[in-house]
Image (cartoon, rainbow, N blue to C red; front, top):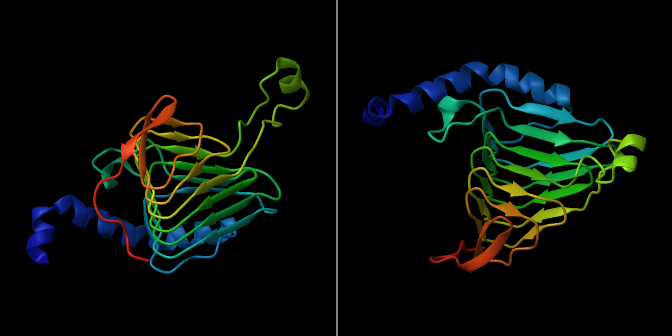
Length: 208
């Protein structure tokens, strides 16, 4: 273990920094009103924007990397976990890993187990603002919303954008830089702008 730490010294620095900042992260999570889960590892300081009249449930093994040093792909900002409106329901299963990404929930976002979200990706179930100019002037925050469901074992490549109303089937893969506007079937690879299915994921699936 010592040899491994010496060979990858940046990882050792990351772990020491995580342990030193752990108490402050515990306070920040408690202040946001989110229950701390078993085995959480927070590198740097994620941003928690939690509406007091929303519901948030996050499972064990959360791994958020919010600094450029915590991942060689280089997070360009902290992770952001946001429930934007009253009544929003954000549910995240066990083993979520995310680097410098955002999950924004205005209505409903459900994330399964063992989902990995690549550096600087964004998942949002809302347009934030209306498209028609008159509607924006009347109510700037009245953007359309639709639930997002991300099933177990999904892998989302870096700098992807997952938009409202999308369902990502179990074990699917989203290519880096993709913009996902429609459902992706289980076990398939989708990429592009807008993302389209380009073939099946090769290799073994996770046993239940």
